[in-house]
Image (cartoon, rainbow, N blue to C red; front, side, top):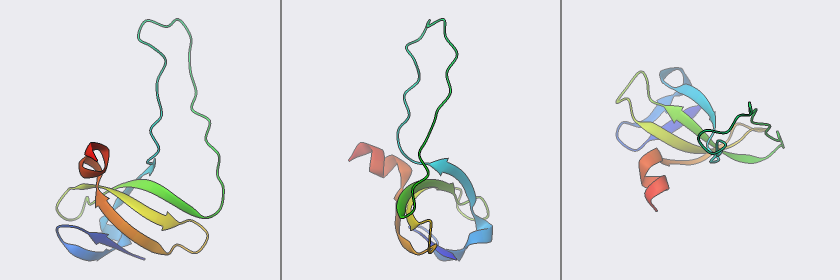
Length: 84
């Protein structure tokens, strides 16, 4: 699997570290007296995932990938996606 880094171009999967789902998860308000757990669905199909180009430029990327076929549809810088 090759991930398209915006700075380095297409690179092999081994250069990247997977962090998880890129969907925004909100924590309870500060000072809450409860513990919390994030429960996420795991459906087949396209997902936005957070990856770091650890073996290259070090950029944080949001990668759109089909978890069934492992097809990559694109990648963008994580901060650029959050700003837009």
